[in-house]
Image 1: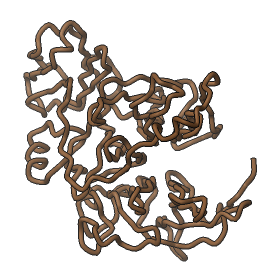
Image 2 (image 1 turned 90 degrees about the vertical axis):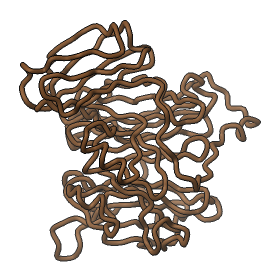
Image 3 (image 1 turned 180 degrees about the vertical axis):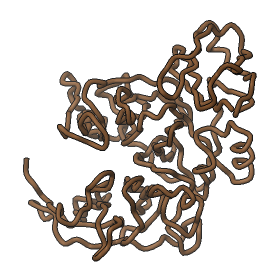
Length: 410
């Protein structure tokens, strides 16, 4: 291993802060710049802040740090951050709410946002809000960004006790936090969503498995994964849910048709990337317990039988043209719903037809199985009068994957 940059004395790394995101200049061969976002302690301060910088690659090391965006308020938790280089020579940068959810809805704050910057750190003149870095808002702690087909941008986002999310990012759109977790499925959430132009996630998970880095797979080396989002999953605070999720998408890239899970025995998985030449994936391990305990390794997974065909390079490119139109929440091919929610006494469970003949489970947030039943109709009446007040989740699985829905019993 060769060290090309050591800023350990600068980076604040206790708990969740640290060196967070990295991306390369789109014309790296002629402009060898590396962009990095990290936490640091301001002089005389005790609370971490966050900055975006660039370094020059001189062939052996990274040199000449230039600060592009400085002193974004940070915290001991929820700092984000991921970077995504756009085709129009701008950068998307995710920021967390630093543990203060109200900041996510405040357009004067840079926390709980997806930001958009020029490569020199200035504000693009065509940003959705004048003289503002803010591109989208209402985020809790997004720690995954990637391109998809048809100009789509995906983001993975940590939920609280429920509803980790996979989102499609669009400019000037609200993603709901802290007033909405996951889908708009309580009375208060539906009212807020209708009034505030909220986009619902295309996938959510409860309890939270702690979703992280994502990338889009479109390569002939592993054809079974083509047209899929690959996602590193840390496994939740209690562990046991760690994996690489392979989410097979519809042709438009707006619907998760199936989720498969791989690499469940490597501990917490922090991030991943794809080799554009041979189609191999690389994922970073982060130990067995929160917030990271080692061993910290980079693992390569490759199809050793694949022989790269240089004539196929053009077909492997993903169209990353950014869409200027607003993206509406896609139609879902399958669903489960609960109403009313919160619930008193009786709950109605709704299932799409492809769940008929399958099994549903009601599970407490401590992991205890409370009830199991067969899905014989698309609507089931559930008596919850004997349930203890608190959060539960409804879980159902079919050939297309598993869906969970959080339920609050009052």
